[in-house]
Image (spheres, one colour):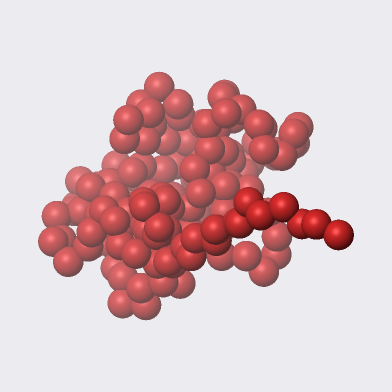
Length: 147
């Protein structure tokens, strides 16, 4: 990886996106990296491109009533008997002075098969830029320190 150096991942833990992610359709194999045990952010790292990685998080950590209402064909594509068979993550973005998450296009990962898809929800309650954190700017003064 470009951020963590060489990382060994068990093949059983690889996540396969048949159609890739929106805008990145030629990248299909990813690994989920957890920088620390207590964190709520993860890296979805491309196995085939060290520079390609996305920060992701569990949407329920930020929006407790969030539900990814999948269409029948979306659950069939991933062989999901129910949504409880899936892990749902959302991509985090920096937009101006905010961290936002894309609640409209969640990543749905089958817990057992590790097959995954990024789906587009038809539920208008969810935004592509749902603010989760405001980033405060810190300006540094360029004053010289004299003695």
